[in-house]
Amino acid sequence: MTNTASRISFQAGVLRFAPRVGGAWLSRGLANHDFGVPTDMATEERPAYDLDAVLTVEAGAGLFVETTEDWLVILMSSVELLGEDITRSPIVSEEPVFKGFSVINYVF
Image (cartoon, rainbow, N blue to C red; front, side, top):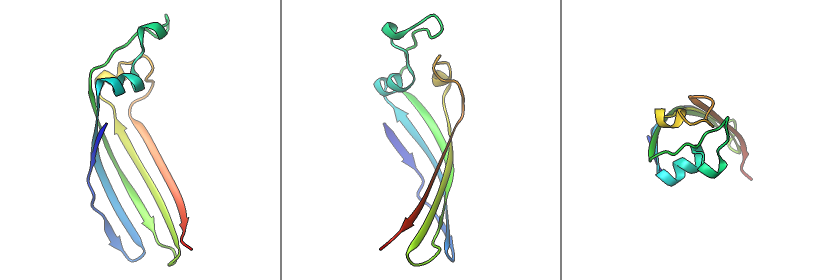
């Protein structure tokens, strides 16, 4: 998988805001591993499905808050847009994909 993303951030005092835009290219093998249905695993409700290489696009933002010299709070969220080849797969039920991540970090 190849993933590219912007690396820009804006800081104001203890807050840092980092918007993110990126794309991920998945080879045919990885796309089929994640979203395909092999013939030997197909059922009546889940027919076989084979993909070529695919590209997804993701956009999101991160917020970093340095509450004190030792504490850092990180909040990140993004949305990934899946291509039509992926959303036609019988095992993909929703599009887009929403992601979130949060961390409280203490440095000692």
